[in-house]
Length: 391
Image (cartoon, rainbow, N blue to C red; front, side, top):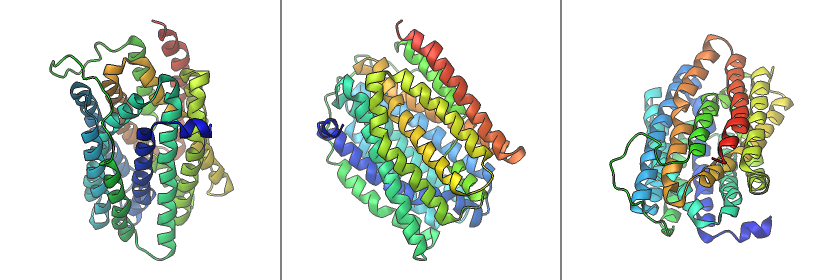
C-alpha cells in the first residue's frame, strides 16, 4: 500500500497537500460554529439548518457550472486557485460577525469557493491517474483532507485551553489559508481534451450514461438523509460534551477517517465500487441510529464518533471513483459537476428537514430519518444501479 501511494503522480500529492492545509483552516472553526451560534449569537437548530443548507445549495450549483466550463475549455487550474482563495479569506470573517446572518454570509462565501474548485479539482485527480488507481487516488486525497481535519480541531482545542476566544480562533484560520493559496499556484494544468460541443448549457443529463443517471438518483436519496455534520456536533453538545470535548471528538472522527480513507477506498479498486459503497451506506444507517439513540456524552459517544469516521472513510473516495468509472474522459468535469450538484443541492432540504424533525419531534426522529434514507439507497445501489452498469 505504501509503495502504491508513493507511486501516485506529483499532481495527486500536491492537491492532497493543499487539501490538508485547507481542511486544517476550515476545521479550526467548523466544530465551533454551532457552539458559537448557540452560546454567543443565541441561534438554534433551525438557523443552523438554514445556514448550512443554503450555503451548500449555492455551492452545488457553482460546482456544476465550474465542471462544465472546465470541460469546455480544457482548463482546470484557474478554478482550483480561485476556489481556494475565496474560501480561505471568507472563513476568518466569522470572527467579526455579530448575528447569525453574518455567519450565513461568511459560510455562503466559503461554499462559493468550494463550488468553484470542487469539480475541477476532482477532474484534475481523475485525469492524473490510471483507471485502476482511482480508488487509491481519491482515497489518499480524502485521507489527507481528513488529516487536516485532525490538525485543525486539535489546534482549536489547544487555543481554547490557552484561553483564546472563539472570535480570535476564527481570525487565526487565515494562516493555513495563505499556505493553501501559495501551494495552489504551483499546480500544473493536466492534459484535458476540451469537449467539442459549444452549445449553451442545459439543465439535462443528455449524453451521459444511463448508469450514471441512475447513480445520481440514488445519491440524491442518500443525501436527503445526510444532513450537515454540524448536527452531530450539536448532538454531542446537547448530550453534555463541552466545547473542548466536542472539538476533540471531531478530531477523533477525522483521524480515523484519515487513517482508513486510503485503504478502504482502494478496496473498491479490487472488490468493486458498488459493493464497497453499499456496505458503507448500510453502516452509515447504523451509525446514525446509534448517535440519535445515545443517552449521554460518555465513552460510548467517543466510540460512535470513531465508528462514523470508519464509515466516512469508506464512502467518500469510493463515491467519486464510481463517478469516474461511469463517464467518458472528455465529460469528467461535467460528471463531477453533476455529482457535486446532487450531493450538495439536497443538503438544503436535508438540513432544513433535519432541523425541523429535531426541534419539532426529537433528535432521534431526525437521525432515524437519515438512517432510513441511507438503507433504501444502499438497496437501490445494489439492485438498480449495479444492474444498469452493463447497459
